[in-house]
Length: 410
Image (tube, rainbow, N blue to C red):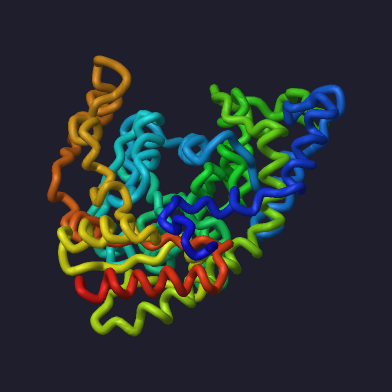
């Protein structure tokens, strides 16, 4: 019986729709023995096509494919010139790569509290800004947008750059614009959990020509290449030391096919999410996560706030027992709860960048309790992952069980 399969299993939206398209595209790269994007016996241009189609889809001037979502963040920060003496404000609820990418650039992450959407709270953001703030890194969590109008107003007023980390929200939108296209640079991930996936991979987008050139150099050892993949000297942009965050043609071949399926994937998530919400709204007193643009959400997951952490833990256990979706995210903890974040532990015994003279004059202290709203919400939140491939019957089965679980806990 299809209704008896484990609906609590992790949801991998893009991977669940893998098919002959991805297989055929990857096979073309292998058949032509050309897995490197810039040169080879017969380069198929998969990465180039992915970049061009992604830029067209998102409506940006430039798109650069990279090796991971974390690489995308590092490339974006490098393009903006972030380094020692700089602070980057990030939300307190996100994947640790946001903080890690800042530390990798020898800058200091500053954790900002969140609003009821679990994204950066504009009021708290104002309180985080100092003379050392260089960039605001907004995160669109689990297919839902942050309050971008207010955040961009604050950024413009303080003359700050904005990175939109849209790793979890490809094809979600905010007031008619795709997330990742509103700030100065947008980043995306193609890791397995994401809406479209190539296993790993990332994307960086911008409308700014100078930032785009710097992105290219940051991801390709400081190089700019011509159409044939040959390194050229660009007199207008002399360059800087970069690293290797290039995407391979094998990754690009799968990413390209996934991009062509994204509207179908998101459409499936939205349809199933609506059915879940309509069913669960029969429970009196149910409190949903706030959404700054409900129509634009890609519905990677739906979030219910329960009255207490204990209720959320109980709900998670019961969902697992009944084999339906319902789990806590990040162990119910804010990003800074990682022991190495609280202790500022890095790869070098010197403690850099936290001990760097440019950073240590006014040190940032990390401690539990510094973002109380984030700690409260993430502890009480139950995330219901939305599988785009579920049938109506499977969704109804899940709703019936979730109603039983939640009705006694709200």
